[in-house]
Image 1: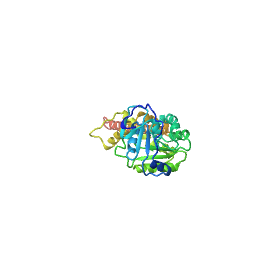
Image 2 (image 1 turned 45 degrees about the horizontal axis):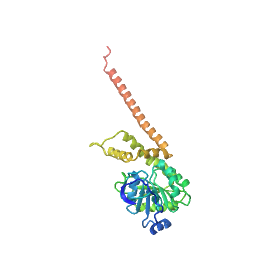
Image 3 (image 1 turned 90 degrees about the vertical axis):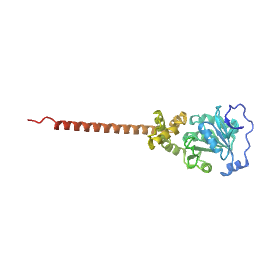
Length: 301
């Protein structure tokens, strides 16, 4: 293992998993949020690297990415794939669309006592994938940190994270809610379907509008209103994320298609109201013009 820098291509896998510390075993057995443990982050893309760095402030974090050349935060240790899979807790920071393939490939090599957590921005799909791929004895938790490198640039304090039980393991979800609470996060417990139904609006609309505005290539202006500047912030926060995330949000959230239809209808309703108002004003101007012409005509005589 080595610290930070650029992630190399893995060529050799260790045969022995890293030993668990006494502190981490206490954490896993009793659900205590006190002490440190080894956390593995699988997938060191934009969010994965950010999340690994945030977790490394309190825990020993090791990271792995299949693609070489990724920049790794200084406090995060680069490790081989099997070593990351044998961590006390394993965060899967991969795209929604690749999750099932990744989990199917790595699940047989993950020890029974490793806690596996996904970080996908939808929850029904990944919770189902985890439940049907791992044995029921595996500790599984669905999570959605509802922030990223842009929205968390000033720190994690007060930012929302959703925790969903997998296969009804609510006590395990509650324990991990305590873990996130110690990071200063605002923890919300809910079922996966409830998450997706609400996130389709609270998150999906932001990404949808952000991409629409991004296509307009809006620019900053010295005379910009506060509202306009906030719209530019929405564009920055959404369009800095990978395009694949936007596509996956629309594809894998079962409520996204309804939101898309609602947004399209709302746009059309506003445009239709504008057209009706313009027509009404033109008709009124025409009537006023005709009335003025009759009054100004030659007198009869």
